[in-house]
Amino acid sequence: MRNREKPEGLRIGELSELTGVSRDTIKFYLKEGLIPRPVKTGKTMSYYDPSCVERIAIIKKMQSERFLPLHVIKDLLEDEGSAMEEMALAEAFMGTSAFSDPVTVVSLEEIRQKTGYSIQDIEKIEKADLIGPRRDEPGREFTSIDLQILSLIRRREQAGFSLDYSLLMMGIYRDAIRTIVREGTQLFAVRAKIDEKLVTMTQNVSEGERALAEFMPLIRTKLKQNYLGQLDIQFQTIRDRVLDIFSFKSIKEPGSDIECAALIYDLLFDEPAVSLELEHLSRLVQGIRALLSGEYEEAREIFEQYPPDGMCRAAVMPLMGLASVITASMSPWYLDVIRNFRVAMGPLAAPRDKVIPNTLGILVDYLRGAVLAVIPDSFDTHLSAVELLEGLRPLIDELDVPSTHREKRAIIREVWIKSRMILATMYLYDGEITKSRLLLEEIEKEPDIHHVYRDWARQQYVHVE
Image 1 (tube, rainbow, N blue to C red):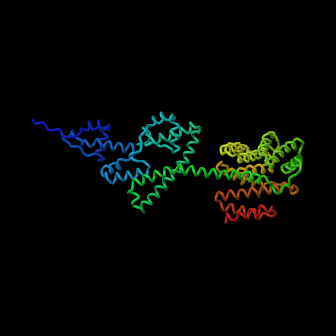
Image 2: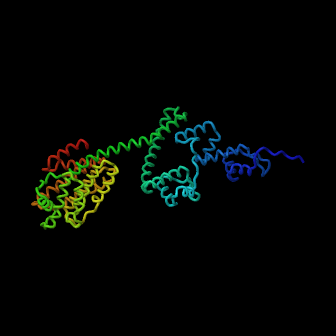
Image 3: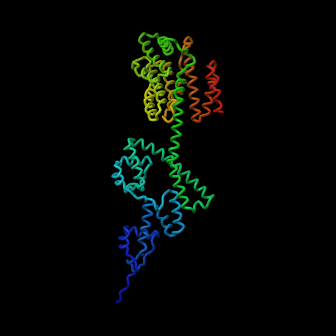
């Protein structure tokens, strides 16, 4: 019997050994049309073309490095010309290329070992939408990009930034870049319809995307410089704005500290003052005088030394915050400003005693809200200021001040006007034009108010019409 010649080709076992994929995977590729059919010499004897080795290597590379689905890989293999050009264009637009470092698969355990993060921390970062596995449990796989992101988060921790803070900060960048990617892709698609050459010039697209990537850190630095410059301008105006908050047209400045203390007591309380209370008030007046004369550090020290059980302790707290805010705004260094503002936030945010008299409570909330309103919005005090100032209206409406207490009635009325002015400005900043206009109308229609307030309201109409 004559021996039959062995066909050129590889048995499935040989192909499996040369490519590193299982027999089942080879059969699956065959079923999906990714590799050519073998030559069959019998019911259980098939020989695969040697080109299948390179073809399977390409399939694995496209899966592991480009994460392409099999149907896309099939199209690329069937039409090497236009399909490969399409992939090259897509890679250029995404900022990747066949010559860049390949994106590889990384296991959860490898990520844990290389970053030192626990499984719980990795899951926390994953929930923050900064990394994401290629597939869910079991056998979760990440990419080398995820590993790089985790390494950057770890680097921030080593620099002293907490994980939670880094997740919040990087989340801001993620959201901004997500918008850039979406709108940039849409714009590219629109321009591609207008200029057909745009989608045929892979090298130009690659260079254009590279220029945008280099543009990102430059514009970030420029915007940061501009923003800090705007903050500096705001800091320079804080002192005058805060002192204006504390200035009342309806009060004539008394002579001695004792006279001033007696006036403050009469404004805030109904009962006769005793000598100890007047002594406490006198110390409060010393701090106020230091504040008005520009001795802000001295004023803060006086307020800090006010007795904890003093009758006006509740009023001292926002005054101490007021002095701290002015001191902070005058610092030449941004980091010093941040530190000093943190000090100021304490007394401004401190809750007031619920049993203090209504008049004092109104003044305390007015001072707290008004001072918080002048702090730049990057310190996140805007909403607290609005809440405090809006809460004054019901307190003032409920307050019953005898007609004989002229000074008290006058100052409460002025607090109402000044709080409306601040709120009108804040509403305008928030884009709530109608609410701002209504407050301006209330101020202008208020009878017998100081002309400064009415003139201010009229000037603001230009912003709400």
